[in-house]
Length: 78
Image (tube, rainbow, N blue to C red; front, top):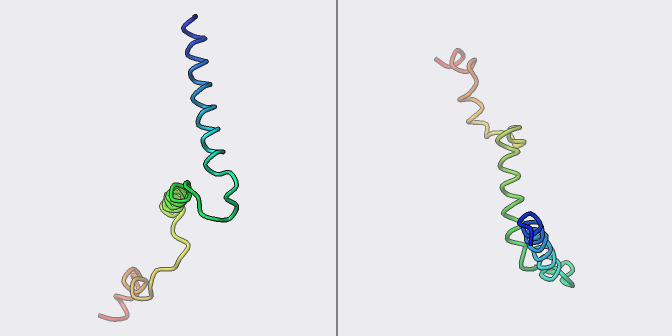
């Protein structure tokens, strides 16, 4: 068999196997927990961390941290 065709068939087989495995693992579970939940949570956690790193955290820092970072606070309290 031609090496390029062999490589294409092998790649297609791998993708088809992964897709079939995903559907078999997640089939008929509904809202109940399934095998992929820990993986999904890890991906969502990593996604959230990257977004927070790039765009900044949406939560406000504690009041004490804000005072430490405020340059005017040093002038008010010598």
